[in-house]
Length: 174
Figure 1 (cartoon, rainbow, N blue to C red):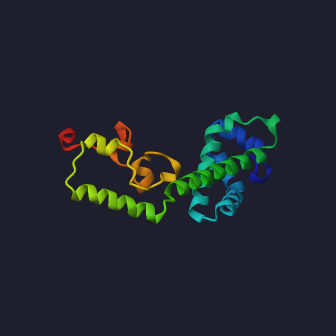
Figure 2 (figure 1 turned 60 degrees about the horizontal axis):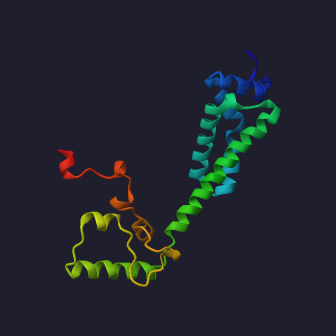
Figure 3 (figure 1 turned 90 degrees about the horizontal axis):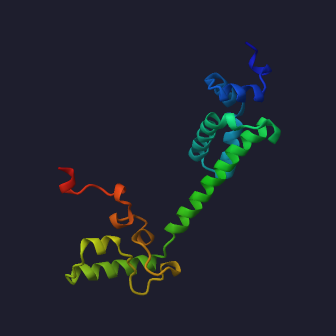
């Protein structure tokens, strides 16, 4: 077998496409720290960078056979994987952050609305309470009429979950 220094990236990708774990290990030794440096520079989060590197090597393992040499050097393909996974991660963080940014006044108004409903003894059917969109008086819900509960509280309620995501009731557990 050739010395590691002699193995080209193309040779390693071809071996990975043939499910050669040894080749993935060598590629990791060659690019793991560089991938981490890129992911960390983009995220400023050590744990996220480590996970992104693992995800990138998993993607390389799963899609090595799709690499097309005419598209450019292996190195460019490898770095495009970590770069795009990191961008996707940053976009998902931005979406979650945007959903969670609810003004304190809106939360307080919702609490007053919910508590007044409970204290007045008002009862609604379980289905309408859980699946309806709730909007306290005066709340804007970011311009959306009838925002789902998850938008107001940051936590989904059973009505916001698909049927297979809902916890089992006592009757269903027996």
